[in-house]
Length: 238
Image (cartoon, rainbow, N blue to C red; front, top):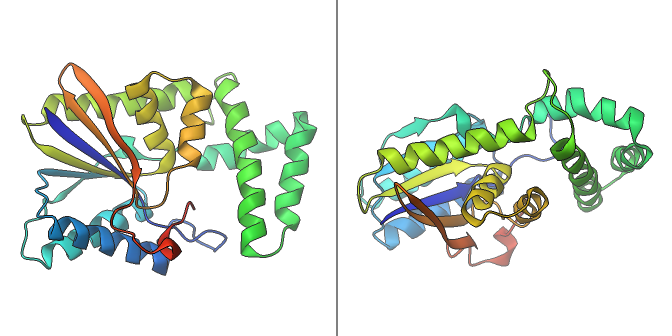
């Protein structure tokens, strides 16, 4: 069987002008991953990354740290399908429609806008985001937002691509985001849409989720591991 290791990007720059950049802590997380894999003499055959800066930065910094040990890191293949949910469409198009129809979501939006301090803003954003994604999952399709079925479809395309193109007993590594990882878990475990989201919320930055597979089988092997982040100060979720 072959192995797929899916890495969530390191901590991004929450509540800044450009979220899609690794924070300094996120960069450290990625470097620690590369060093850990080098120390383990882990052989990597293929590396994929999504189109977001935070995903590609995590792959790049992991690879640089890995190469410092004199090991070979494959050239990263960028896959558009490894992108996160359509966050632009969700916040710019879907959220205003939901706010006009759902008073609870409007209340959560206001709570987030008025929150002060990083911890409170993280908490209030998470509550609002969970509500938004729950309604998105059950909403009718729309031309201006990628639907939940379309999102699941591109997750499935990536899994099929890796199953079909990987050499026997090879290791592929994917750098992506939490929502995409939740979708891969849903495919492997055949769980509900809501459970896919619940799994997503627990995925730490720069954590490892692994699957074993053949062309006809795809099985979860481990979930949300952070052996490279021994210091709890480096454990983050957003």
